[in-house]
Length: 236
Image (cartoon, rainbow, N blue to C red; front, top):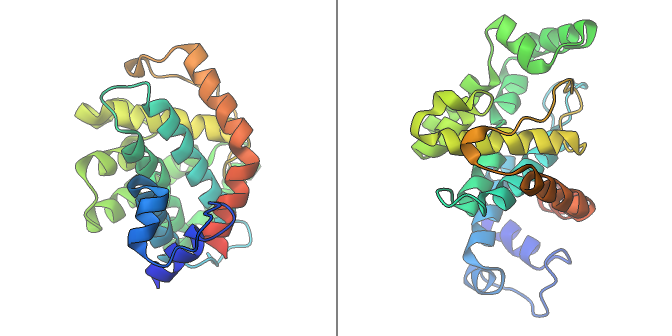
């Protein structure tokens, strides 16, 4: 039950509440609406997928921790971009790679072939997906539309590897593209990702190198707590 999980998380040491929280209303009062909303999104999405994705080569834990790390650094950076809402960008980061989960659940043989080619040829999963015509961005967009996510969130899912295609939502897609790259550089990425690219900062964001470095440093400083807290939230 979602309510029970929210209350268990709200009462966990990770949030350090001095008094026992016995209702969602109290959780909102103590933790704040945005924090509870982020918990609801994370718990709802993680509960929608089996922890066993049918492949010994795919770690659902690694993927979810990558999604959370991407969400967190997107939230941090969004505070420097007036047109973007930090908590909306947290959600965008949290859902950007759900297409990978769907692919491994329902297209297992195709994903095994993609993983094998990636390892044998030293290519990224994305490059091999594109060769096979099986883009996780397109798969994720199908889910985003089916579940009624906003146009902004669906656009981020679809274009987080090619932000210029997102039209009026280019900044949002570009921010998640950047956050995704930062998370991978800090070792909060999918086990099988081939990291052979420089970190690119899209010009449309208007962010200085120092701002990006500061956000990456903050994520690095939070890394241990982030992993411990969200492992408890998602996997217990």
